[in-house]
Image: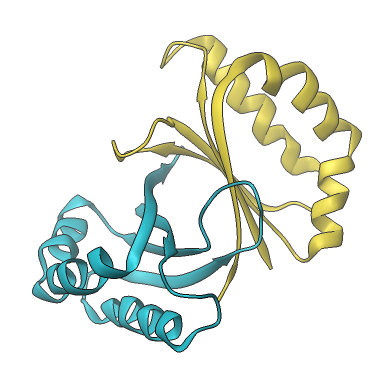
Length: 96
Length: 96
């Protein structure tokens, strides 16, 4: 099982409608069949620059690739993510 | 529920005994009673500088504080973490 996480900062004001719509569009990607346990998370620590995160799991690399290459994901990255995310970091991990 | 994560890079060579001992000492902190679901994780992505992570959950901030202030945690930070970790980032979050 691979856990894929991405933490990010939006250009939208906190609590704005635009922020809410972004999170709705992001979490709609859970409809891609290989995505498991997708969650939008809010940062509560103050030890980095990010406000939001998305966490999800894939059974294996093939399932992860299916998500990455899915037209809905590609469209989201090009037309939403790249326009609305100011800064981000991806962390992918497996249990030791 | 608060998820506390920290991703880090050790000064030890990958696959070394020193690395293994560090991870054993870190995960021994799961004995602190308020810690839930502690896991050591290995990074599989190449998109940041970290090799390892620790993830755990706390029912609330009070339980988190109990962990932070516990003598075993304080001792670990002072005598192991600060001496063996080269770089790290903490990310704490709640489900949206």
